[in-house]
Length: 243
Image (cartoon, rainbow, N blue to C red; front, side, top):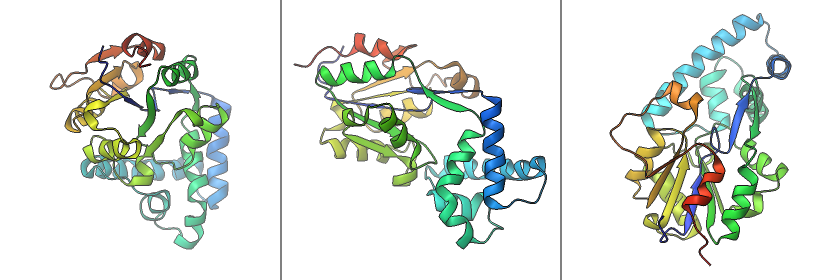
């Protein structure tokens, strides 16, 4: 335990929320996305093209550690052949449908209760997340009734920075007024989250062991977390009451 920690920042995808396959939900998202842009191709042709352009975007964003805004994502990368003046106003909705087409995102069962308890224990809470959407996380926080517990929400799509760029961690620390050495981060990526937290000089890193993430990106072994957990509520064993 580290009693010097004052602020705890959390990731969202596969940390506070997980993706559940829902075929009907996913199929409807695909249909709605094609209808919104007036696509004339078959569903397979349309999404094959979109997937290819998405992979190209992801490659460059991971290399540059920069994130495009929703408007730039759709007008420059994903639908560059469509009139920008038509696509730009639809960017927010398109992003949500693109996210929905691969599953329904739901909070972990113990996420809300853990957030509330950490807040009660006197910790400043915040979110640092790599995400292409500007509204999905705030909307979830509002619908789940946890907005008031977070002092700062730093999204890559809003600040144009991606983890593991230490700048996104420093920005979060500045927003809550706590020096990095007194901040902790909780994330599921064994490479990006661990390396970014260390590069930013955060006082602690807790890795959430999520099978879906580990299958895509196994630990490098170069940099290791301070703690490893498998359930959100295990954070309560790491962070005792401050008051």
